[in-house]
Length: 357
Ligand SMILES: *Cc1c(COP(=O)(O)O)cnc(C)c1O
Image (cartoon, rainbow, N blue to C red; front, side, top):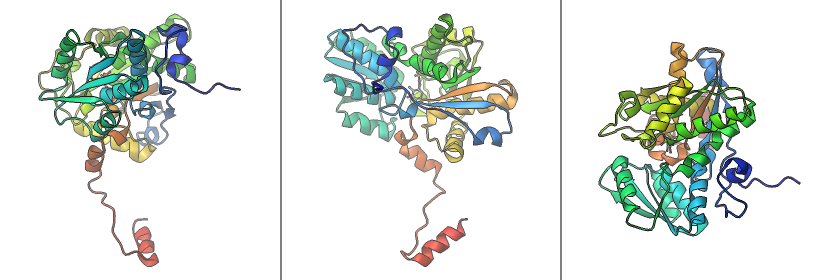
């Protein structure tokens, strides 16, 4: 009988820093679907294979769960009774869930008013202590780094190296499923932990000859929060894609290394372009990701249009989070698609259908 799936630590145990006696804190994260786009490549008239790794189908709805299962497992192993993070939303939801699972406390620092509704609701339900600051993510991050020296709490932001260990498994899953690494791997970049983690994962598999190639890493940012494109931190990052509203990325050096070693690049896209990609993916493929996630597809489509990514390429775009997390943006995106209101009789329903065929 096949053993039921218990999460990415069990699956990739021999490639992760756990021992036989480690108590694993897991919610069966990982093993997310890799979905090949069917309609969008045809619409843009390009002969390419585009796959999306839908990380929004993790237990709390974002890829953060991959890192959090490792970080919380190691915090508990070290005897920690509480974890803390700064967050634009998804890290706090994930930290809160894994703390609940472990039976420890979670403290989360969030920026004032700039957190998507679903992420806030989750974090409240998982019963974390939410500390809202009059400031942005970058300021919250600095405060968390300081307070960890003065209070008995473990930091579970991606500066915690166990986070990247967990997150690198997404690259393993892609190679295990395709049988090769893609030619290009596109993803949104905020704090830059994820692009660093994928690069680590691809490298480990290439070094151990699990696959013969490594992808070009393409990191995409929001125009108002694009420190990697600017080449320096940004003071007041602004974007509708709140998950990547970050001006001072903590994994700067690792991300630059991933870009340079892979022959990749960073680029930036306007909120309008990001939102258009989010809608396109929902409307034409049935895949609903959050705004930040859509930066990966916006970037891939743009680089395909200029030929920077050539036809014939195999591309993976990471969709970092689930669209349901940010209902307010979704409703704004569809402001013109108001439901029609009719009388409750057969004739009226029939007319409503025929009118919009
Ligand atoms: C955290 C997050 C990102 C950014 O990932 P980094 O590792 O900080 O670069 C992008 N999209 C979503 C949905 C996220 O939650």
